[in-house]
Length: 385
Image 1 (cartoon, rainbow, N blue to C red):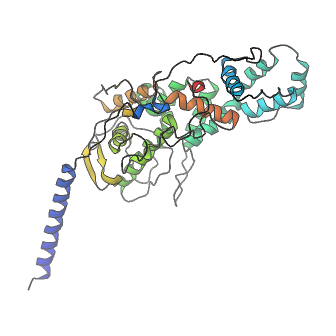
Image 2 (cartoon, rainbow, N blue to C red):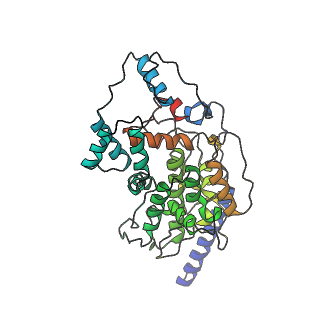
Image 3 (cartoon, rainbow, N blue to C red):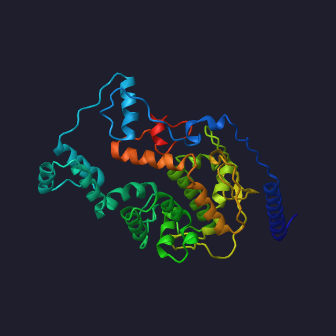
């Protein structure tokens, strides 16, 4: 008859053997992925950006800008006529609500109606763009993409006392007309690109503005959740790709593998180091090394699989660029510059579509966060280029 002590020893031995076998199995897992083919890149959003020629139109007097040529060409092909121009009172109200989200004062309407100069409308546009309310109005659209909140979410929903710093940075960046490439780069790697500039570090709060669980018992689970949510958001906000679908399995429709997802996540893993009961508000560029990046089998943080190295998303990497830097912080910097290079097929198309959506109520593609195979085709793809 086995004593209680012997049963305990056997149980511990069995557990150790099971864990050892599990670790060996994790190392033995080999994931495969399909190569990216020319057929994969035939989808419109993966095609190289080209500057299209202006389409020919019959009505040569209506177009005022190159954009008008594309709009009119579609109208003429459908045998439709452009709508008549709105009256000046309607125009100024539309402009005010569009740019700053507020109606014009009665005296501002009267001044505009009395100004018969050819550039009367342009002068109001310039004045509204220079208003502080412009940044306040348009920041809300970006903060929605950044899943900005002043609390952590979940059941405890603790207040984030420093959240306002990122919100104010976005407003300031818009009001100061920060170039979009810099705007993106600072949010992904500002702490590395401009380490002496505190605002550049504040900008990295974009990556960590999602829901968080600071008081969870397993900080490793918390870190895994933060990283997956961040990777998904970067994919949808900047590239309009639903990357999150690939954290557990290869994407069902788009040419994005599970390995692609974790390669992209690997750029950010060294910079996410949560501490229990403390909110993580910015990326950390300095600190002790972290464990090697791995694919999580079926997305389960308790099942780490093969190691992966940071690499650019294959389907969008038209030039097949490789990551040159060895230092993890510089690799993240390299990713930020890869994402914002002029020939990236997605980044500029996505932001053009978002701006169009907020001005006209509907994007040129009606699915602004999904440029993949299940998203809507753009009505005027040339305008996105």
